[in-house]
Image (cartoon, rainbow, N blue to C red):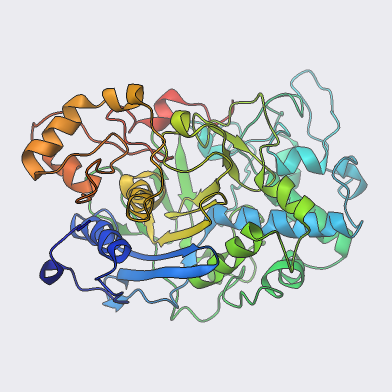
Length: 481
């Protein structure tokens, strides 16, 4: 397989051995995305069977000053914070400090949100970790209501600096549903952080360092940064086709079909801002791959195998996990592939993933022995654009892993396939991976060509989608099932 002529490869900041097929294909995907203005900078790490087989960084950590991305660049993790905090919570469960099924008023007596009928139902740690508590996020509604009415922060802005203050505001908002009866992506992990602080009598950053980041040597993964010399600047793409712009002090990016996400990139440098268990950390790709590999290998030295099972296996069977998409379930820290065909991904059932709204994504596929970290500084393209899907396709294609899409799914994009074959001399199936295994083209290229009037509009999505109908993913989804 050859994805590009070797003398045509782009410059990058960490140059892999481009005789390696994986490096060739990943470098093409990354640099096409940068060239096309979809991504400003990125750092990718791929590990298989316990060995890092690719490190690739390219683009700018700060485009305006010319500072490039390196393996030491720190990125805002946003919701990729959740699995780390959830792992720390399960470590406390193992020690008997927390309990999955006791009412959380044991630790937070004031946290008693009510249903619309006035009932204050029992909420447990299990409900919070699986996002079945009835809580939500403000950005999931088109006007941020009712959360904005009550002044609730999503943990990404600086409108509320005290965790207890934010949770007391959250208590005033009616629950979406009775706990345990449905699924909704939510502020639940921020509540988990407050429970951990109450149970341990110490700040959340100290707890996470004691139980997760310290034992794993993740020194660059933290809730507060004083020295910003290695911190990537945050960029916003403001939708398809727009060149990413630097985010302002307080900024807003629309989540298509949902609502505005309100950002404060400087929050991570504000020592007064509460540590958001759901969105508050920064980290490096090098650090995050350590965490994923510990989980993939069974949890040591931070968790037991049983806790890893709770974290990574589907705990909400029977519920739609709309934030991840069709074919996904959810554990106590990650979205989990239930059905590869429905999820439209080459990854095996049982693989797990999550991402962050500053433009980050990761996944682990235990059956394939894979752990992959994809960090960018571009919202939202690094999370829900074609970029993470194309990296995934490059990895599975070049490693010879099975493509699990059905003929029925492949048939849905005949026009896109024919166009791709004709104009680029390649032939792809609808997951963006060539059936002939002779080349791989970024869907960014296909997208650009299609907008010139040839064939079907190309794709993006919050999961590994290659369908020509999936860009407006939020328009057909409610993130609360």
